[in-house]
Length: 419
Image (cartoon, rainbow, N blue to C red; front, side, top):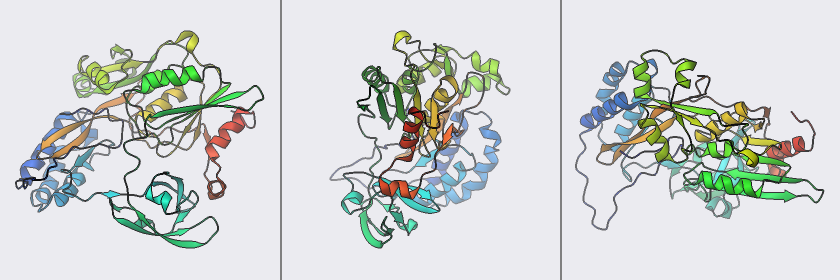
């Protein structure tokens, strides 16, 4: 079993390669299905599986899965079963190369006024090479996704109102995240005021030392903007960064796994959450899982008291629809335990801790093995984080090259409409 702190929405699954690859033996889909159902039943963090009658659901979907004639058919059947449990971080993956997966183009798209609109284009992507730009509207949305390496024939309306045709190669460009995942700069306007800008596209095992470096460089700024809009998750290294803004060491996130919840035998209370053993400095995936497994399935992850290193100037956190998992854990902590202002749109609502399980013959799955609670017993699991200040993107801003979220944060820093 390979562990993944499930706070990221993507997995890299290793596949065998070789010039003389041998044919895969025929898959016994009925046996594979039974392994799938048993693995979920034994490892999903909530002993009740959110109230789903798992035996009945498994029996209902079994004929379709057992009758599968290909990996693609079994994948559909298995995912249909998993859909009975309304949970993020719960997915089935086929052996590499056996199922043609869909991918998009090298651009981020958001629905604006009901039309998929380009908000960002990766510089080295084929989409950028072909002339796709922020503000472009995709008029045939269904053509975007397809097999990696294939061509998407797009009808695009530009900012000038003209419609053009673009043939763009479908590429995987947003995973793995850009390295280093923390990037920052200080903007000095010459008027004696400095603003720090920190973009974080993932919270990974190197997150804590990167947070320390970034905050050391931006310690003397007059305000700070933290951008987690493109952050799909990672691990608890986010708490090292959050510690720069909290008033004192305190419980921040409670992780509870199946053994802890099963031993309770009743609904969780705030007192139960507070009884979870204190854990400090668990800033890598392995450290978090060690803490959970070594403490009967419960761990209260604390922020640190950083003393004079604490940042006391205004902080604005930018979040959006793609802010997910560990990034949502970060914005929840920033919203509830600091004076930071959350700017943008509600987050994805995909916050749980998951692990990867091997099912054999190249098949694997991801299962949430720990739920996430606030120190007061409030369940954070798969809850979207609301923004303090909501910003609606407009195509006019994109076409003009304006980042509406950053503009709003800067206006608030300058005192125009501050919270």
